Image (tube, rainbow, N blue to C red; front, top):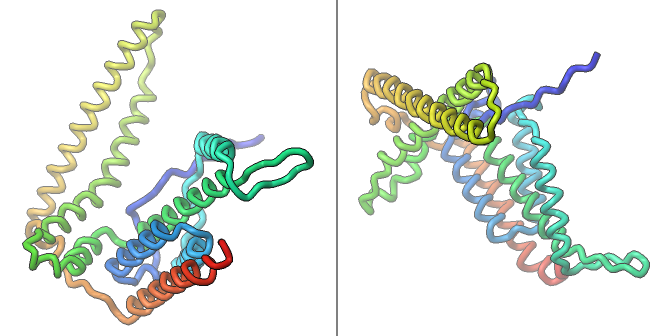
Amino acid sequence: MTTARQNRPVVLLRPVPGTSPIHELWAGTKLIVVLGFSALLAFYPDWVPIALVAILIAVAVRLARIPRGVVPSVPKWLWFLLLLGAVTATLGGGTPVLHLGSYDIALGGLLKFVRITVVSVVLLGLGMLVSWTTNVADVAPAVVRLGRPLRFLRIPVDDWAVALALSLRAFPMLLDEFRLLYAARRLRPRPVLTSRRARRRRWAIEMVDLMAAGITVALRRADEMGDAITARGGTGQISAAPSGPRRADWVVLAISATVCAVSVVLQVTVLANVGI
């Protein structure tokens, strides 16, 4: 007897239980690293920067002891879209050209598609790593600390940090609520409808009911969160926690800056001369 393989859902904004050197890093350090690597791959989306960033992420995943079970399953329709995109990009042509007898296949478009896909996967993995090793409550104080110079420009950094923290806290709760609503909808008995017009009307009614239930759940969660924040001293307490880098954070920032600098130097000087 064979059992169907259950798909693993996407679990974000919830740190993996346990502790590790990556878990203990300051949240601001992780935000700076994400911003730096994102800028690097945005301006230099080439194989050398991609490989260096991917190696660093793999080492961080190993240090953080991320279990394989938290990695979400890739849906089949996504593989189909990737295959369709690869075939479409191959039709674009470009160098290099693969010679197979009397046929010439231009692989330039395919290589560009693969490179952009790998960049997306690397950045997605970086974001997941930060999500799995960072407590949501530590993000707002880190944003306030990083945005302190912007206060001289009269930018409401504290309000932005509170809004960001509340959004990060509410997203997992609302996601679970919508999953519960969707599961409850699927358990409801479906009426037998013979005409196409009746099926469209029924679908529209169910969508309206689902949206109304979702809005009601969101308002109830917002009311509960507001009461909890008021009981704990107001929104100012969200971003008032002491936050700052330590020695390990400076080491990580130095390593990340070195990787960015080496990538840029290799790409601009050495690899540019050899045409890579």
